[in-house]
Each structure stands twice: as structure tokens, then as C-alpha cells.
Amino acid sequence: MIGINNRVKSTNDLELKDRLVAINRVTKVTKGGRTFSFAAIVVVGNEDGIVGWGLGKAGEVTTAISKGVEAAKKNLIKVSVHKGTIPHGQLAKFGGAKVLIKPASHGTGVKAGGAMRAVLESVGITDVLAKSKGSSNPHNLVKATIAALNELRNPFMVAQNRGITVERVFNG
Image (cartoon, rainbow, N blue to C red; front, side):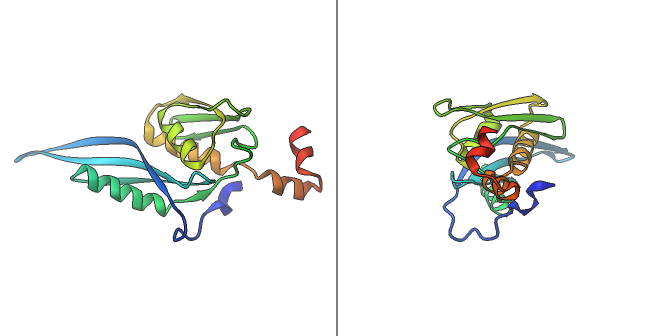
């Protein structure tokens, strides 16, 4: 797996912004009645190439969100962003969710659905084309999107490995 070295070691000096992707109310029925709890999936990022996701579960919505943010801060990865877009197209799958992301020219914007949009905007990508196929479950979409971003290769490292310039990597 290519993206294994993309983990971020320290979160102390990062200004992370959190985004709530989805919240789910879970009902447990017992002899005494119904018990409600909440599960929140949260994405955090510094909008400069670092992103992470977390799942928080609690009896109250605000507690679930704060637990999700803490879990997301433990899950950060570094993503290769080049001129506001991604260096190359990538396909990834998690569970039943399949995700395709492609680079786009400047001014295109983020063409992506809800859960994917949250991840892509949190990482700082401004121009990208994205399509989700299969399951629309936000949990699996977030995980598949982060898996796709984790597999991206840095154009500077590719140029260094091949012994060519970065411009030649992009222009063929």
C-alpha cells in the first residue's frame, strides 16, 4: 500500500476545522422502554493537505460530535494537493461504496456529493471531479474517499524517483 507513510505524527501545531458529515439516532428497545443514543461521523482538516475522520457515539448529540472530533484527530493523514487539485485520478472502494476522484482545471470547483465534499473541502482541494458509485452510506463514503486520497502519489517524489522534472511528470 502506497499511502502507509502519510500518517501525521503531531497535531499540536495544526489548526484543524471540523465538519459534521452525518448524525444517526440509534434506538435500543428494552423492557423498560426506548433508549436513544447518537452516532456522529466527523471530518477534520486544516485545508492545507491534512485530513482525518472519526466516529463518536454518545447519549447526546454534542457529546457524540466532540468524541468524533477527538477520534478524527487521532486519524490524520497527509494528502498530496497540487495547485488546488489532485495530481492524478484515483479509484477506491470501502465496503459497498466506490469512489472515483479526478483532477480538474482551475475554476471548476468541487463537484462532489455530501460526504465526499466534506472530506475534499477539509483537505483543501478546490478543483476536483468526484463520483460515488454503489452504496451512499456516509460512513463508507468517507472511508472510501480518505482511502482514495491516501493512495495519491506526490508528483515531486515521482519526479525524483524517475529522475525527471515535475513538469515532465504532468505533461508526459
